[in-house]
Every structure is written in structure tokens, then in C-alpha cells.
Amino acid sequence: MEIIIGRDSQSAKLLLTVDGKPQAPVASGEVPASVAPQHCKLFINKGQLRLKNLDINNYTYVNDQSIESKAISQHDKIELGTSRYLLDWNHLKPYLPVDIRPLKEVWENYEAQNLKLQIKERKFNALRSATGLITMVAIVLSIAGGGRNKWNLALYGVAIAISVVFFIKAYLDSSKLPQKRQELSKQFQHDYICPSCGHFMGNQSYDILTQNGSCPYCKKTFHT
Ligand SMILES: [Zn+2]
Image (cartoon, rainbow, N blue to C red; front, side, top):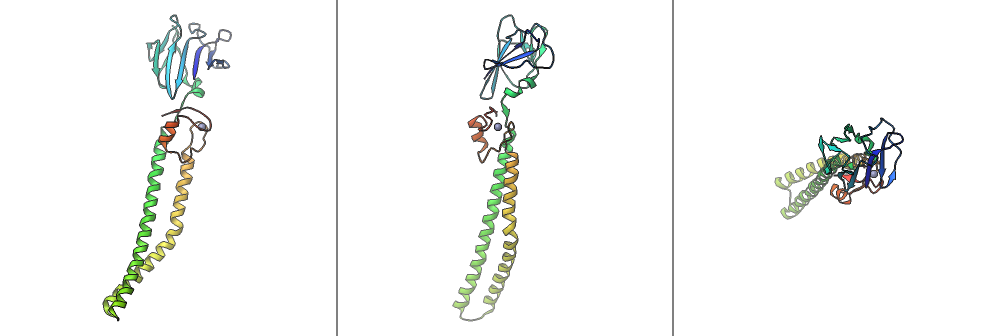
């Protein structure tokens, strides 16, 4: 995308020409005459910005330094003309790439929580099968022992106690874990959204988002 920044000679307002299409002059404030109708050009390419002065008689300043062509960021101070008209980034915002860096943490947090839940589920299942194993061992020993000795009884006791504990735990967890999973997914769908259009980005990792470089819904370029 290319934006020519200049002064509308009729209204003396700021004029932006986006990819060859002049936009309505910016309503707020007058622009001094030292800003040319086609003063400088902003190139936007995959989240990278470059500002180019369009004529030797124009003066374009980036952070107080006169430039001809320079890579810039949205935090730089841009001034135009000898009377140093300060360019307000807000006027350019609709055309600028949207910053998705906060989504990195959202994604990493979601993955970590998801993994934690998986480990919890697996541990729980492993413990439950261990209970079954203890019970089976107790039965096998009692058959092999051919009678009731105190070791068999103790083993039975332990197996039954563990079984009861796990039955209660299983009963409680049977609703807790899926509920936690649902909460996690709900929060993720709320947070992992395009900052521009608010659409949920789906289960695409942050790396995939940066590779794609733009929102599949509003087509806005991502700044990563
Ligand atoms: Zn979007």
C-alpha cells in the first residue's frame, strides 16, 4: 500500500491519497502552505513502513532529522515543511498494520493451560487404572494363597479404601475437568481475536498468524 501525504490546496486540509485514490481531506486543523500537495509518500509492506520525501523542495523530518527516504515506525515523530507541521498518526491509523504482538502471550498461555489439563486427565486415568491393578493383585494373591491370611486381608482393605477414594474423586472430577476445559476455551475465544475486526482467530498458532501476515476476515495487515 502507498499513501501520498500532502496538503489539499483548496481546503488547506491534510490530504491522503491511498493507492492512487484521494480520500476526503482530514477535517481537523489547517495545514501550512509549506506542505506541498504531494509532499511525501508512505510505503506499507508486510508491516514495514518507509517514508519517502517526494521533492527536493519539500522538507520531511523524522524525529527532527531531515530525510529523503527512511524506514520508520508508528512511534516516530513526523513533521512536514519548513514550518514543521506535525503529522498526527491517528489520521493514518485506518491504513496502518495492526499490532498483534499481545496475541503471542494469549496463545502461549492457552497452550500451557491446555497441556496442564491434559496432564491432569492422564494422571487421573493412570491412578484409576492403578487402583484396578491393586484390586486384581489382591484377588490373584488370595487365590494363590488358597485362604485368608492377614496379608490378603490387608491388601483387600487397602484396595477397597483406594477404590472408594477414587470413586469419590472420579465423581467430583467428572464434571470439574470438562468444565475447566470449557472455561479455558471460552476465555481463549474471547481473547484471541483480531485487534482490528474482533473476529476469533481460530486454533491457528501465533506463528501461523505471523506467517499469514494479515487477518483472513478484515484483510488488515498484521504488525508482528
Ligand atoms: Zn480482522
